[in-house]
Length: 225
Image (tube, rainbow, N blue to C red; front, top):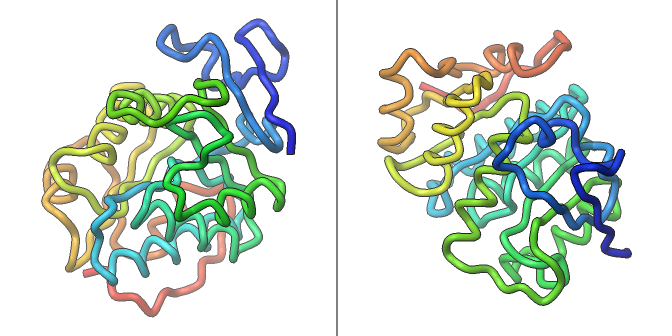
């Protein structure tokens, strides 16, 4: 599929980003860029998550997607990948933000997932042109775009540093609704968020109601607490 380009003055540039001065002047994308103007929930977590956290990530992604919510993250290994696979299993639409040019999906192990997202009507975006490889500081800029683009955000599992914590902190700063999963295998970053007044605790699948406009939630067999 063709890599396209839009700038802030173009009609197809995401309206969610246009209001922020820190947003990129130019975006490259593949797929349906109009998804960036839908109800978006960023669902993220750490790379080295436990099997229980990965299972939870998959189910949260599937549940939200099945209710018509567009799922967003950066397609990182671990929780992000599990969220996206769950969302696609739920016949949902997905947006991914890349820290590199769209000719080199990152991580390379997710190339098939990248292709599935685009072919199923999703969208991948980047502020970097073809030929740009991922660099450390690009990931922080990618995470900032996620915080700006999302209407709401859910932390599945995180430590007290890293991309998930940074993205969620920025989402809070931007006034977004932020939820944090409370379950037995959660990382220390979750505990920090849950002790604050800044996030909505998610202790059961019914708590996801705040992150979708629809009712009628299936019960998960996964035990949160």
